[in-house]
Picture 1 (cartoon, rainbow over the protein chains, first blue to last red):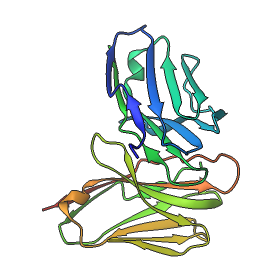
Picture 2 (spheres, chains in turn orange, red; picture 1 turned 120 degrees about the vertical axis):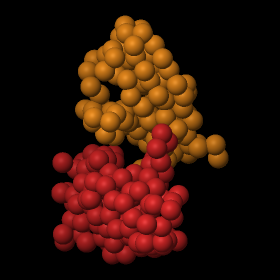
Picture 3 (cartoon, one colour; picture 1 turned 60 degrees about the vertical axis):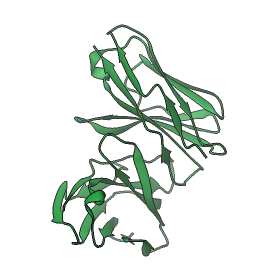
Length: 112
Length: 112
């Protein structure tokens, strides 16, 4: 299996632009998680889905962030409009319920 | 908080020595997982221990769990320079939010 796939791996954008991060979970996994990691705040859970349904989005920082999972093999995390404080590494992970989480390589986002 | 808290925050040892990291948590758990993160990379799952287990081994890793004290420890025996990384524990709650949350981790430095 290819593991969790994230794209792009790096993204540099200007403040105010829309950013879309993409994730393909491991086939057969029914849970998907989006995390953000910064030096200041560590690794934060933003949102997670179970069977394509958002279960807990309490970690989403504000309305500028949105996430979708239209099917079992694809999810997006969108930031609109982006701000410099959104600069971070964004990780996607997938798992079978209650099991091991498998992380993607991350998307390194820099908002200028 | 449902996240685990690792202790110590940083640990520096010589190659060949053992490294012990501790984790404390506050809620009733289904299982507890340990992850490793090399600099600039995603998290890699190391081991999962269920709430009804007390000890588990995987290669040079030994994990213990004491649910009465709400604590776990990770022991890496005969450490190698390649073990240099950050280590995180992640308790999975028994009920409610079924997602892992991560603490600040233990930064392990193994000197060759």
